[in-house]
Image (cartoon, rainbow over all chains, first blue to last red):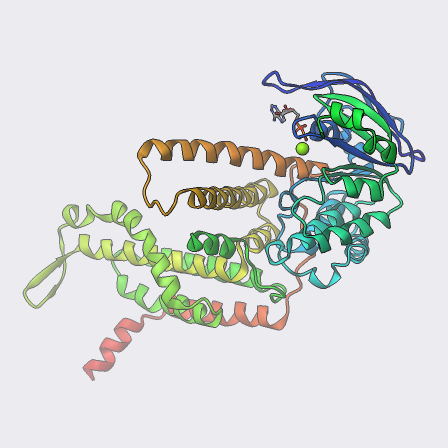
Length: 236
Length: 261
Ligand SMILES: Nc1ncnc2c1ncn2[C@@H]1O[C@H](COP(=O)(O)OP(=O)(O)O)[C@@H](O)[C@H]1O
Ligand SMILES: [Mg+2]
């Protein structure tokens, strides 16, 4: 996969209980882009990103990652390309030590243990957690847990990073460290956030969702200073 | 409040930098010990008393504290009582006499079942408390236990801790709005438990998604292979020898003989 793009074509998704969470979403994010996905609670952001690695499959429409249509069959392959950092880091940390958590993905890929160690070391170094590799998740601070969750995805060597509200529950210092960390990546990034400052700092482009639809897509600076758009999206 | 959190932590905690291979050695010793305890004939509980040396010494060596292990092991008494309580009334043949009082075989077997229950649970508690539940499961897997079984065990433990986390969060939310209220009507507990189920299901779904997203295909990957260091070997050899002695040498009659001389 040389082009790490994300392409949604007229995607709808209805939850089993009948809730229409996506009502015809089309968007393209190209190789190396950093995009913020904004919107009120319940506007469909989490539902959308769960489509990027086949955890949810569209009720209608198509999702394509780097040239591969996402289906049940291609999901394992797509999941290697798309690293997803979930909203609650505790959902991603369940092994006895941070080391084992970060090794979880590479071991599932059945890599030799030398290669696993190499990847875990690199990922932990990248997020500055090398010293706590042997600790258990509950011994770390909130910011460290978030970094560990990110490391557990980096170790799989993804091309695209998708993050769901990574700055939630972080103090100012941990939040700034996180921004610096994400800023140092060269991945294609799709960032769900309520933190408009973070969006401004990291993402040149923003997509705003409202009630299951994309209601605006453009330069972050322009969108966030456009009072009409912000009012339509319910931010004001 | 605090106690639930502490219990949760002791479930997920493990000793950092724990000796490599020690978990496996402890697991083997525990299994040997269970075989030794459970193979003692039903009517000779005096042999079981000597086997108590393992939980007493091992718990102190592992820093669990025998007092704590003993108190926790009392939990098994209701279960054991249920199994053995009718023995004294069914098996009424006299086993031996203390002065004028005849003790029937039923009572002897009841005591025997009680001791077995206590000793077995103590050995298991020591294993889990010192190695951590997850390492114990991993050690089982590396000893050849099928991964279907160990993955189930692992996820069950993970699920229990998820439920505990939700209980903690909900208890906090309740305490914060309860203005010191101590008891709630039964109907509230119904709602509390309903809520708990929904929230735990949601969390379990989220965790499952997070696992799938990282390539989980139904079996948990094994960690690094455990290297056995000298302390693991010493633990295995010394305890195997000691347990064998305690099981096969009849110390009770030796003591009796000694007293008669
Ligand atoms: N598991 C689910 N079952 C039914 N409806 C759901 C489920 N998850 C989310 N929804 C609904 O889908 C809509 C979009 O939710 P979500 O994607 O989580 O929004 P966001 O992440 O933007 O807050 C909401 O109306 C929400 O109530
Ligand atoms: Mg969400």
